[in-house]
Length: 286
Length: 107
Image 1 (spheres, each protein chain N blue to C red):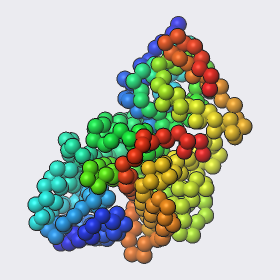
Image 2: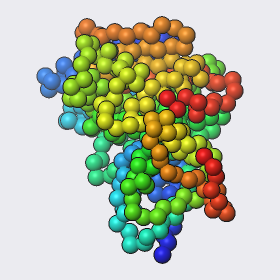
Image 3: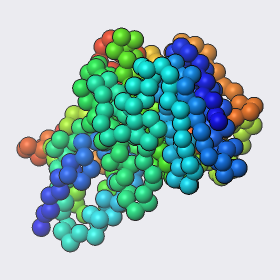
Image 4: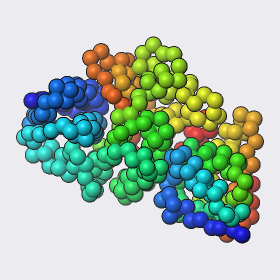
């Protein structure tokens, strides 16, 4: 039985760490070909970051033949929210303030697939978030799914968004189980010491894996600039053992996990509602 | 002979991935028509990477490609990419049209 314990409160970092530990337990159970039993009974507060990380892993092992069962949360609000967002398998319908979990397996036959999936999510978001976000969400989501499409060779990707009207912020989560940023760099013979350093290089546009091509490698950097400088939000990136946490006007945090890792890449944006309409274009000239 | 393609039907409201553009241009290049008019009506957004791919593919295509009904936002993104090339010393010829009267809008 895998006990799901998630930190209470709004700290994304804490819930990301907790979720990676749970993912590691799921992997261990799957490697031993054991049935995966998740005990969610003690969960009192869940952020979309945990939902996407855990459900993304469950979808992946399920597609490889795992057997999964879980005990529902005792807390009725959490139980209801899990049902509303379609935990863990995803759901077609959405709520007034959230886009349900969306998992999609890679379909190499359809070159438009990622474009179609992102369009569907954006259509669903219309009317759920304030207009003052302008084109920022469209841009960020677009660049993230474009990265998944071009670089990750994913077999599963997951998306989710939740707007919190009282707290006035939007949480946006994008996960893929493909080639990680550090591995992509290794493939391209780009040197780095720690996985978090590879993420840092990708994020600050110091280097791109497609060095010979002009205009590539702006994606992550421009997403960072828009979310931090213009929207004054925060950004968390996990890829393999590396994690980066960036918050407006705070020193960036970069480190490698000792005991856990993510076979894939996870990006999580927390974006406060902008007071005036966001203009993304000054951040794109690079 | 001219062919008109409505991009909304092909891509949806937003165009995000390079793959969609490269596959699309491969199809365009195989068409028998020499002139292709691409109608951007109701396309709200094109990502920077797609705009980049579009310009590169258009540059190398032998077809005469004309863009019509482009929104301000889509236009802005093409101009962002064009300016980035300009800064890097690469000249990309791409004229944005006001589509109703097909007049060039200076970049």
